[in-house]
Structure formats: structure tokens, C-alpha cells
Length: 618
Image (cartoon, rainbow, N blue to C red; front, side, top):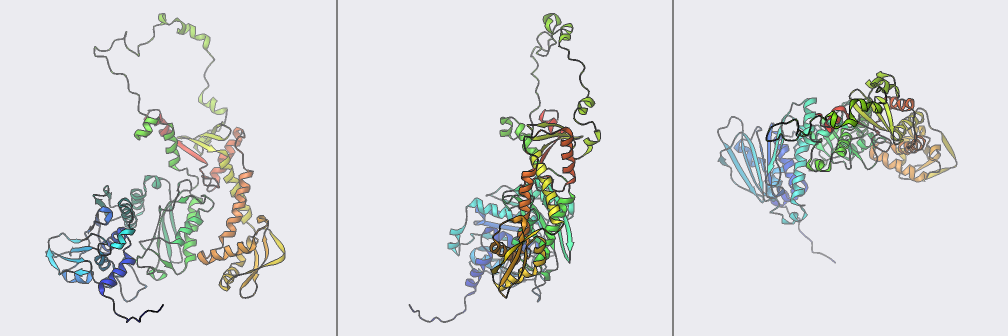
């Protein structure tokens, strides 16, 4: 089939803008992201976002930034016009820089831009409807800029078929605002509209404590209570933020926030670094919660990868990944043992009556005394009147002597039955008091009750000891009778050769065998019979993606975890008091002992104040 030759022609500005909108404006949340970024670049300290119909009917963003004079409004809605970029494309120090957002939005929606710069007597407004630009006219407005977008995608109705439900689009807009708010804690954000509940994030100081308060506003108080501060720097790259303790995790990675020079990004390298940092602390189906901020020279990162500016490329990805993994693991090691507060909350909820859980009560209600009689109090009719001895001779003082079992044990005497050393009460896990169901150790500290899963706890202790023994020296290797020759692309062979020394420490001996092959002469003894070609190709793929060869280390650690599981104290074994206390002291001295190898918590701590609330004492 032949077609008639077509003449090359210049596309109209409207079509060009609509093509650009297809890349930049994917959904209403994309519009909010672009407009909020413009407001932040303008120096705004207060940003208000209003939506209707999931953002498809209305999006209004109002800020108190620097504003624009009337003569700049036509340029603001024209493509490739920006005040944020110099001639050096690698020196990007603002959130926006492409000069495409406003004209792209105006090409597919009804857009109005109203702005008043500082010191001006009045404001000016310009409108764009389906790519048609109106004349600038004077209006009344406060200092700053207001951008209103109505009937999104009315000019390209086919795009409306790909939108999700109104609730889903509203949730996506909320997520965008929250992500931006985390990076700019000193800015006050307000999100309102007929399709949502009002979200207000008050401005807080832009310091460590202020950031933690903003994190609590955005990610919840639970995360703020179960977080570790992250701080590290290496070769001009700085890392700060917060990451959750292993016992506080989620079923997906939605609560992992990454920022590069203040820009919210989604990057597989950063997500993989988080997964690598928690490799032996979380199971594969659980994900840590984190808010991490990376600061580096703009010349060392490329943010011009995609028009949406959500993807970045680092000049040295291995450095960034290693910095994240090392910083989080170091924080986990120095943090000692910490139990998730959500475990205690769940335990408290389990003790509540069903009607209290349904009503959302945090603790049982206090005892309410019976109402006073209308005729006043009477000793004869009071439900709390004392018993008369003559009326209850069986319970009179002389008759109670028959039930006397001797003097009650003092607190010190009872404690001596299990552990006589009072200084153990001041340790993080306290002194062991009992063993319940031959699996749970009950310990007491000065201000809390601790319940320990003995099998999970000892499993982590054995695992850490095995890892230390395995990685302290090169692992034993078994030599193959005949070397295994694995054919692969030349670039993969180059990558494996560059990591040969590292792989040899784990018992994998390989060398180059021609331009497109690798000869494997030794494999780790711990792995037993192994599919050598598959292992080598997996390593090559990981090195190509992350510049690391952790797959082999993960396999060896998995074997160590299996050995630890089978070699630890089993459930159902009765322990003596000294064995229980020895296990508690080992847990206190072992990093990461708050979770087992499978990511389950090893202990739950219930504060005395929580127990008192259960019994209505508080």
C-alpha cells in the first residue's frame, strides 16, 4: 500500500502547545504541581489551593509571592519564556525552568492569570482559552499571583476518557501538595474545595525541629514518633531527613519521599537504595517510611530528563546510593533498640471493649458512681453502706482468721523469686519477671511493661552473629571441576570484571574469557549447587542498574537467616530466669534487634501510663 507524499509544514502554536501539554499536563495533579512550583519560585510564604470536581472543573492557586508587572503577562503565557534560566542549562536552581507550564495549560483549558507585583497600585489579568490569548486588562487584587484553571481538557476531550474518578484525582492533588509542603516547611499551605475536606499545613521554622513538625503534619504523628534522623555527607553530596525504624513499615512505598535540591522526585535508584538499606530488617513485601533530602551541586545532577521534571539522573549514582544505604544503616546501628509505638497502640486497642473500639475511645471510660437518691443520702439505703458484723457473722474478723495464709510477700521478696538485681530495672528491656505460654518473656522496667517474643529475638541475635562471622573474612569457595563459561554482552563482562575482587570475598571466583564471556572457576560453598549462568547474569544486571553486586551478598545473607531461624530458641521452650535476662541483655547490645530477620517486631513496650489508662486511673 502506497501513500501520497506529504509536504512538511510548520505546526500551529496551538497544536504545539497541545503536544507539550500531553507531556507536562497528564492530570489535574500535574497542573497543581506546576502552579505551586511557580508560586514557590516567586518567593511565596503562603499558598492557597482550591479545587472542584477533582480539579477538572476548577483549580485555583493563590500566592503572596513577588508577582508580575502587566507587560510580562503575555510572556508568561508564551512558550519558552522564563525568568529562571540562564544560558547554562546545567545551572538550574529553581523548581521550574522550561517555560512550558502556563501555555500548555492554556492550550487545553480556560486559564486566567491575575498578578500584582510589590509596590504596584493595581493588578493586571490575562486570559487564555484553548490557546487563544486575550488582551491584558487591569483588575483589583492583592499582592501576589492568582492562577485559575477551569474546564481542564475541554479543548482535548479525548484526554478526559483517561481520567480516574473524582475522588482519585482529588487524592492525587492532595499528595502533590503534601510532597511540596515537606520540602518547604516555612511556607503555609491551604487546600480547600467543594470536593475535599480542608487541609491546612501551618508554616514552621525551617530547622530540624520544624521539619519534624511538618513531617508529623504530612505523614502523621505515628511516623514522627517512630523515626530516625538521617545526616551524612560525602564528596560534595549531603543527605538529611528521617527514616522509620524497621518495626514501623508499610505495605507499599507510597510514603517514601525523595527531594533533590528541594525538588520532589521519583527515582528507581533512590527507591532501591532504601530497599538495600533495610535489606535484612524488612521482608520483601514491606516498605520503610522515609523523607530524605539530597543536596548537591546542580552540575552533578540532570533534572532535564523529562518535561514533568519528576525524574533525575546523577553523574555518580553509585555515590548517591552508597551514601543513602550507609547513612540509614549507621542510624539503625546507633539508635539501639526501639519498639514501634503502633505495636503498643494495637495492644491497647485489643484490651478495649468492642463498643469502645467502635466509638474510637483511646482507653476504657472511668467508673461512674451511681446517682444520688432524690431524698438525699441514707446509710441504710446506700449501695455502698458497710456490712454489719451481726448480719454477716461468717465474714466477721474472728471468723476470717481461718482463711489466713500468712504474711504477704513484699515487693522485694517477690522480685527476688525471679531476679534480685534492682539495677536491671533501669535497663532498656528491664528485668525478666515471667514466661507466658513458653514463648513470651514478660519484663519490667521502671516505667513500662515489656513483652518479648523469645524465638524472634534469638533469631535476630543468631543471624547477626552469623553475618559478622561470615563477612569478617573471605568466605570459603568450592572450585569447579571444569570452569563454567558464561556468554554475555561485552559491556556486562566488563562490569563483572571490574567487581571481581569484591565477588571473590564472597567466594565467587571469575575472570574474563575473551571479549564476550566470563569464566567462573569458584562458587560460594554456602550456596551448594547453584545455577552459575543465572547468578552471573543477575549480578551483571544489578551492576548495570545500581553499580553494586549485592545480589550475591543477599543470597548468602538469606542462607544465614535460614540457619538462624532453625538454630534459635524455639517457641515452647521453658527458660530459666537467668536465661531470660541473658537474652534481654544480648538484645540490648545487638543493633537491629527490634525486629527479627523477617521484619516482625521482637518486643512490644507498654508504658505504665498506658496501663493506668486501661484501668481508668488516668
